[in-house]
Image (cartoon, rainbow, N blue to C red; front, side, top):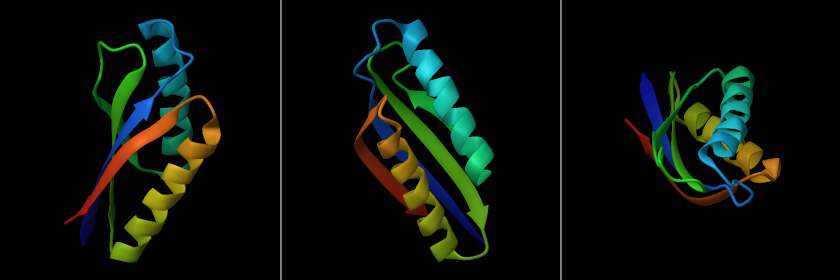
Length: 93
């Protein structure tokens, strides 16, 4: 059994308030959860308007499945257009 944890630091350029940032993130987290069946949570940047760190985790029986799924999640976020990926760190245990 493998556990994958990915921290994704995002920049939300069009966010003028915490409310608008939450709207973007809520929609993005729902899309990620529904499409990939993973756990997603805002783990840092709660009080910042334009920056946030998302935590994504999943369990799988093969490491390559975790790598592939996390790559697809990063691609989905990158293609979204409402936010930019500044950095990400993937750990597989």
